[in-house]
Length: 287
View (cartoon, rainbow, N blue to C red):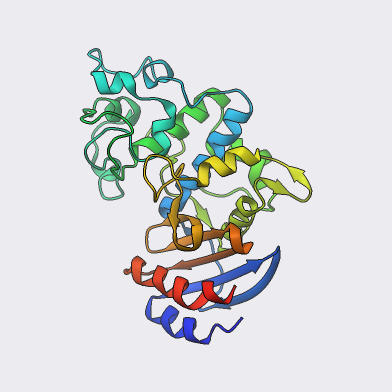
């Protein structure tokens, strides 16, 4: 694969490293600086989606469970009609029903409340779940909390034997909320190679080293459009029928099932759309 045209753009977009695999083999690699564990920001959400998949597979929770049951001790005394309609599934699709972002990176240090679960469930549900796409950290945060409660462990400990250990990922650091619970909407630290292996795991439809770790159906459901045509279960969808884990400043692992390929890069990019277009224009046509 010829990376020359892409590298010119990659430097402009402050890409720090790139890996491309096809049919299970690494076919291209480029580094602007050595690998190190970096905050992958909202790409962490896709790992939370994966944790939900394992929990569903193990019978710890159901996507059809009402939030009023899943968070019975945390909901407001007065339950609005839209909150009453919300299900666990709605935590994964960015169509929860709240009107604006909460638990954003600039917001989290400023909250006076320590119990973020009760705090965010008290935010009005102004839309019927499934009807309005609003990018919001509340859904993935609550999804991660639910897994932790049902599993009796933090998300890192839960994923160690199920995902991280099999993929050769040493125990990572993950941001926590004020009560010490893993913040499933962001704050996971990984290297480029570790993020790339996660993308390969999804391309393999949950199989690793000949073992089916996570059900193929969950992978397919996660990557298919949910309530909108550009979002699945905490994965963005894109050109070439691709889907991706996508974090702030373009920490991305893009899965292209029809090409049998994974493209992963970490960066300090301020123009994510421009960088994505460079990937679509310069890299994807060569696969």
